[in-house]
Image (cartoon, rainbow, N blue to C red; front, side, top):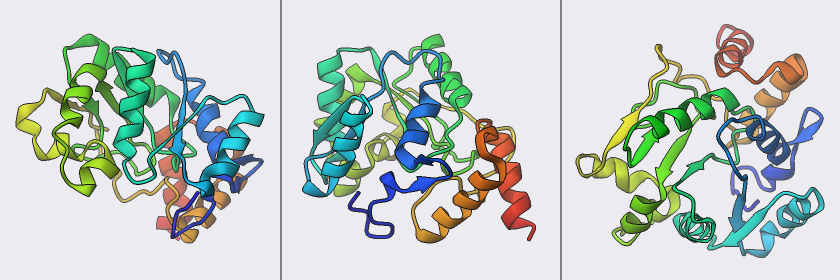
Length: 218
């Protein structure tokens, strides 16, 4: 909620739902997910988000504002699951089938991390990372820079030779498509997309093509 570029963005309306509710609603359709947890901060600016989650019966964890990775560390230790999936809260049209695809890939092999951003060929806003909890708990002790703690996975990518990382590619190149919300301009574009196409925004490829039609071909 303390985003400098778009303050309070998680509770902004996108069509008929808030951004956080859209993320949560999409992830509820994902196969292979046992629990969905909003990992936010203890900062007072995030209290409205916490209250919203409580009101709507969404499980919420509060941790460090700056050390985002520690939130995942505490949750993974408390839940005691073999793996966890990281989805950014600014991805309101995340494709649940894409998330499920990466979960299945993780289950098929002995990977430390399954991702689609080590080489980005999917649109922004469709980023999925599936972490081995055991490896993450060990790796966190090696994090050093602010970037490691803020972006959670950057240590893995900087030290890729030390990990078994599986990167999933889209079969094309959609990295010029932005389906995330970071700025007021992003918000206006996705708001228009949501109004134009409504509940049909579940398939990432369809969403990318509709975004391209509205904005890149204008």
